[in-house]
Image: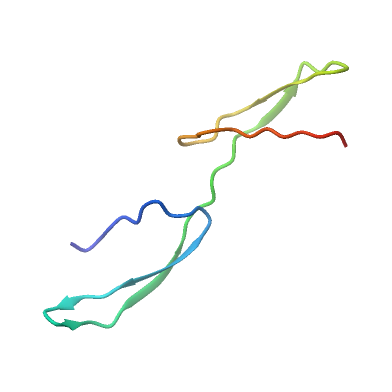
Length: 77
């Protein structure tokens, strides 16, 4: 085996990765590298429509992947 998949990593995080070979009771020097996971992709374009004096409709394009929840916040300026 000369590869593995690292799972359940934290998005947008740098990882130090080391690989050592075991030969009987002896261990090789480490091969080392760094890898950075991608950030969580945002939702797509945001659109505001149907604006009245007390309401507005907000639509957005879906974020890629298995989105568990969208969090919507708003405040007066």
